[in-house]
Amino acid sequence: MEKILKIGRSDFGLFIKNGFYLVDKTNLIYDFHNNANDIVLFPRPKRFGKTLNLSMIEYFYDIQKQENKELFSNLKIAKNAEFCKEHQNKYPVINITLKGIKETNWEKCLNKFGDVISELYKKYNFLLKSEKIEDYDKEEIEQIIRKTANETTIKGGLLKLSKNLETHFNQKVVILVDEYDTPIISAFNNTNSPIKSEDKENKTYYEKVINFMQGFLGDAYKENDALFKGMLTGVMRVGRESIFSEWNNFDVFGITSNYFSDSFGFTEEETEQILIDFGLKSKIKDIKQWYDGYKFGAKDSIYNPWSIVNYIGKSKDKFKPYWINSGDYSLIKSRIIEIGVSGDIQELIEGKIIEASLYDNFVFQDFEKGSELFWTLLTDNGYLTQAGEADFGRYKLKIPNKEVKIIFTNIIKTWIDTEVKLNGNLLAKAAKDLITGNINEFEQNFKKIIGDTLSYYDTAEKTNKQTKEKLVTNEQIYHVYTLGLLAILTDEYIIKSNRESGDGRYDIMLIPYDKTKKGVVIEIKSIQQQKKSEEERDFIKRVNGEIKDALNQIDKNRYYTELIENKVKPENIVKLAIVFVGKEPYINEIEEK
Figure 1 (cartoon, rainbow, N blue to C red):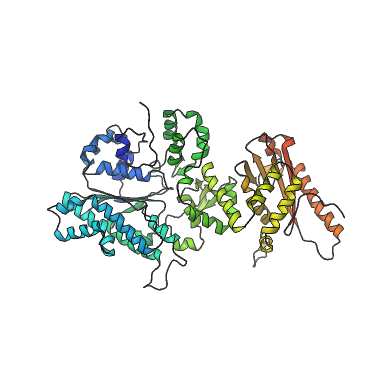
Figure 2: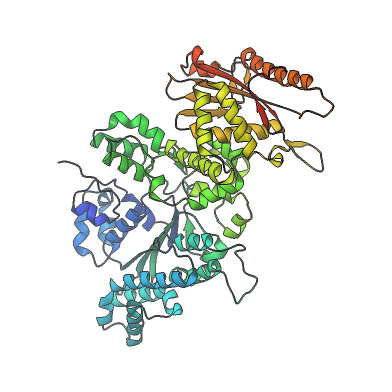
């Protein structure tokens, strides 16, 4: 029978009833049921299967779906017959998603909550005819369905619905909440600094959302006698002091936890089986470079499921960044641009591993102050992944794959366009001149770029005021800046810096994917600007001497060795010296006047 993919749907029943291809994650049901805590939170990146898993759990437990027991008959969970007999379709289930609540102010947000809870209640309008439900409870149900309920009633909507369902069915309730953090993230993005208002009576949008969520989720989960089990999913865990305070029956299984590490995303074994089933096993190497690389807990090689499914469905096309094109990464982009394309960001783009702390609690107030929570944000959202543990509870982090690297290079291009305010056509022309060996034209255009965009402050060395130790030298500043400009070439070149090659460390290297193209090795120097007392001839000799020294350094230390090892022909290697004198770069030797 021909296997059929279904992209962009998250209804478990739809998959089984129509014979759509499904990766079996049903063991999650058993593990969730037997977890010691009644409520669990799974922070995972977007489109890693969270919504489909919640739908699967709903179909398994829901007392209203007795006719659907057969859906699980050929899946892994069915092997545990006694467990299924005891718990399958025995509980009322509430399954609500908050992913659509992305409003720009509190009034719109509250109205959207009213819409979402109204649609939820419509699924249970049979309660209005139940003889077990009191009339005053029915009045509130009608108010919510008709969207006439006030804020207090909406806030208590989950709690009240769970109690009414327990009363009607005489059975405790499973409460599932998908993308619980979407309203919070949206409020943060649309709240002007500072987040915390000094006026207690005039709270910010963010504060109002947090206050609402403390009741909306807190009342439903904390000490709710009607609750049997609860699960929340999201991208991150918002700080305990925000909405999870005093939950004593609650646990988080994030991306560093060894529990449930294979429940979201596709494992290597699952991915290989999918590719075999669809006749694409020969593509596994390329697929691994593009869509693999995630590590959840101790489980290596977790693949992005959204990208895998989209690639299989469109395998006649070239490899594409399906995942990054499916969502909004404005918060990530704005934060990277604020920090600047330097330091750890540049190292990540070069393929290096950095070390940072990852925090279980994401407190937006601290994030705004520029703490290390930035790395937690990137990792929780799937833009970075673990590469192992470092000392003192820190983690080694890296960009997981080629698809995600495209995000970072796109952000650099945005930085160039908006922050550096660079003429994109001029940069593209300069880059083309460089990789075609047209060095005279490259120097002229590079001078224009640097002159228009690099301020005196940018080139000033950074020194520790107390110890007088140089924190950032001129050459490091020029190095990072040049790297950022050359990022425009990342589609065609592997860009590396400060790596060992031959008998030393080169500054910058461009390794072409197409081995018929030219490779480039760059050595960067800086000298002091010409003093008034210095003769022009002496200044020219000084600049030319630095250019010769830089080129000799490349040859003497054989910095080009890595290019040759990457099958770039010696005649296609461009050796380049860039000598900076303030804002003026010199590449060719200056003719004496």
